[in-house]
Length: 118
Image (tube, rainbow, N blue to C red; front, side, top):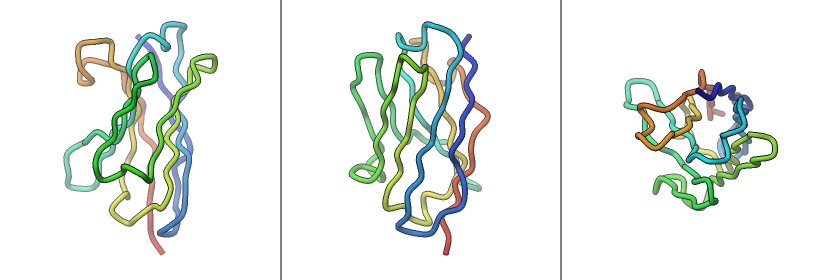
């Protein structure tokens, strides 16, 4: 299985930006759908964005127009550019790789915390 390590979280003021990165081990990363979920305190983990091996993207309605997911297969890395951040974006963000059996049966990173507050 792929090992995933996220980085880039932190504290940012409302309206600010952050860029999350997730580096994957192994050479097969490029074949799979990957993406980001978030989990806010007291809430279920929910999909933020995902990108397929051929670059097709999907976003949660709440982040459309503000967040951009991208991947660099040469670097085994998936990114989440987060702009116009809101307090409601505060959560732990997890990257994952879906091997074709759904995210719950894929590989997950340890999470990176994003706090949006003034």
